[in-house]
Length: 235
View 1 (cartoon, rainbow, N blue to C red):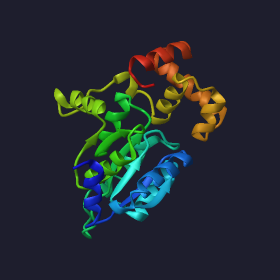
View 2 (cartoon, one colour):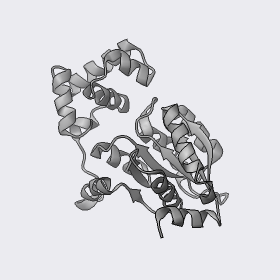
View 3 (cartoon, helix red, strand yellow):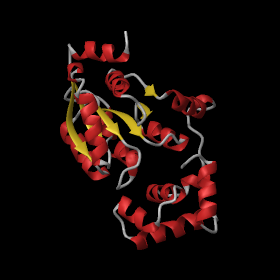
């Protein structure tokens, strides 16, 4: 039986309520269309959000079965959403089921994968996933399974192989969540104005974050910063 058929069969007995969290409206529209076209599977999109504050509010209010969560979001990123929604990840005293999170991101960087898994996500798939595979992944996560794109599973296995605690990058840990977001965008070639627009902050604030990153990492310029980020597969 294929993943689509399994999902369709499951949907005959129950419905999985989903919230979409991504800062690109067109992408959310595309995902809604993909999983909506497989309505026979019983997936019901009950809410959307495009930044951390809205995500926390929508997830808290809707209490969906599964949250499709982007890693890079204005306001602190997917890790911040997970941190603030942690109380919802366990079954409530009122018997309400736990909310489960499935990361859905364009990033396949090991640091991003480990970050959200440490935060409590049940899986991580990239945006290259097909609609039918995404439907199957949603159902698996709602059942409590862990789901990863094949290559990304290796990151998790490697991180937890030697110890129960994932390895710590002391240099990276010196940076705040916002500084990490700015670091990634700088390393991807974004101009200061583009970063400011992406993160909903001023150009001056971007400049301050870049200065702080360079100081903390003891780097001289954005070219060294890009090489540093690339070596750690953060780009």
